[in-house]
Image 1 (tube, rainbow, N blue to C red):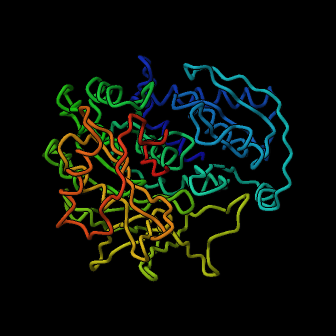
Image 2: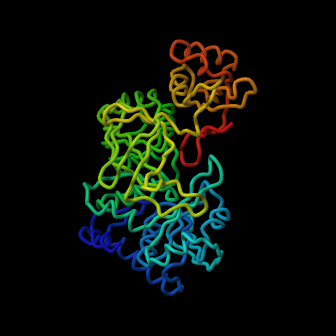
Length: 446
């Protein structure tokens, strides 16, 4: 990671972080990395040890992570809102040290916390004297998986310097997309704008205040943004690009975003914690067709499912069978349609609803339901049924109170002619519950 520190030194006065009324330039970033290197030495943290970093985005959290990688440690970033409990995570990864930041993200307390785990993959990796990164899947389809990366390999993708940008790292730092975003911004000598929370209002205020140019978000967040009308309450004219990924984008939401931000480039992204984030190019701003790949990546389609081969792939799972074939190809479990060089992501195989042997993709149903008047948002999922195997259920959040039977009639009327009969929701639930996970992805659980 020395090359990244050397790059910071070429722009000492450039703004690196805007964090809770503090502004940190790249010279100060270098100083803080060195400060944490000294703390590690004084504390007795040596190369090869697993170190948990508990905190969220702040200059100091980022600088400690860089210091740990330069020290040859395996970094386990966690947040107080992580999708996995700390004890569950450490039961998978093991631990030697626990670095916990205060609520402002400025100062860290280091505690010796030894949790031994016998793991051949991790043991062999540490023997290679490379810095590591362990992240965790959400466990939405089963037990969370510990994902081991070579940190140098993850960062290598950003050695080629790109145009600097002012951006908000939307995804959390315990998520691969969050690590990818913060490395992308800082390696280009851009500015990282952090927010106290990832609510619509907080994000919009930060965009207005710091003239943010790039907003990487999830389709779910953009759906909330459009439903809230917050884009009309704040000055978001500084935005030049909005990227979206991690889940399927409803065409209805994309159309609304395009109408609300006609001068902003809309770009679909694609990546997985196991293989990294690919370069992408949308066919146009209003299209869900995307071309993915780039240097270091290969793609192929087998039986309608996307497979990826990556030079930036994980070392492996710590607690699950490896999902690469003998030639290094990874099954993404994403169903796709193909049109020449472009793909359209239909959804995860695990999300598909099977109604009497017929496939239903939740996103295609959600896309229609979102057009229904008074519907603020919807999550579609399958519910077991003795006769059909599964039925389609729509959990809906409303703008105004309404009787469920009346809503169901209007939803069914909207779906007729647009969806096959087996795709039309058999059950409609009105809910005030949040339809999203803490990572701002659609929660399709009953």
